[in-house]
Image (cartoon, rainbow, N blue to C red; front, side):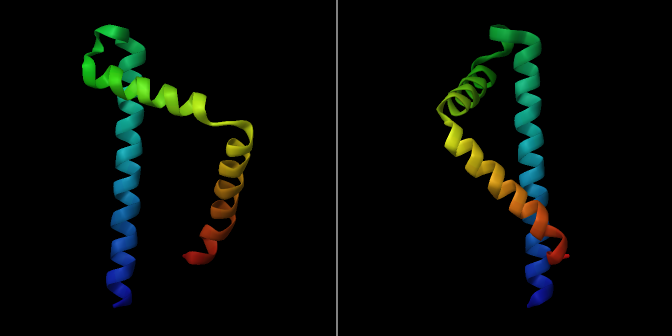
Length: 78
């Protein structure tokens, strides 16, 4: 059972990394091509821009605290 959970965590982590890399690749394509990059790419770029503008200073501080806690606790999980 523990082996299954460890494999699931590993696959989930890899899936999240792949998704994040795809998002970064789409943003890079948008930065290189601009509005000529297609409707999907511009839609993703618009959604990312809307998300960035909606994040307030307290929200950004909260995200930074969560990331710091995960960074500090992650070595203990391994």
